[in-house]
Amino acid sequence: MTITTLAPETLYTMDAVFFDFTSALRQGSGGDPAGSATDRIDESARQLVRSLYRAGVKLAVLGAATEAELLPVLRRAGILELISVIVTAEELSGHAPHVSAAALAARQLGLHRSSRVAVFADTLPGVQDALQEGMKAIAVSGGNPTLAFELTTQLVVPRITLDCLGLKLA
Image 1: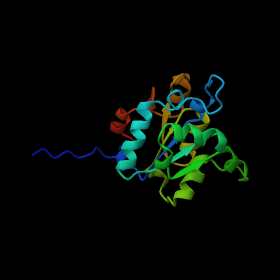
Image 2: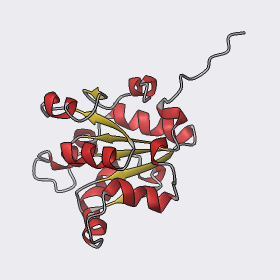
Image 3: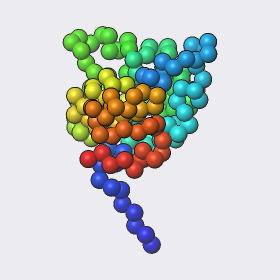
């Protein structure tokens, strides 16, 4: 019998994982305001969300989008019911002074150790907010210039996939 242990500080060992899909939500949707779920949140990202959910990791989605823009995309992607907290642009505008989406999500989930939260962010402000809160920032370069992310964090992935489960976050 082989016993496999997880490397320290992987996504499975985090108290929560947050996904900032800001860039994905800003992509052109071909006239459909909600866009196609497969165009917005690809299957590899949905698989990662499902895997983390099954492992008992708390999940949140952060977005500089409105609830009307965000909820249909998450519903059509089949992951809405897996997400514990969703922070939208409307929620952020009601907090003064500036409160980051990551901080608000952590507060809503009752998390007290920000170092036990990983954040996938596809914009530089999203990465900066996660780092400012003391969270593990994972920059998703996608179509964005990787150099901007590398100046802020050492963890850069081209896209969100199941391979991200093996990332060492320490």
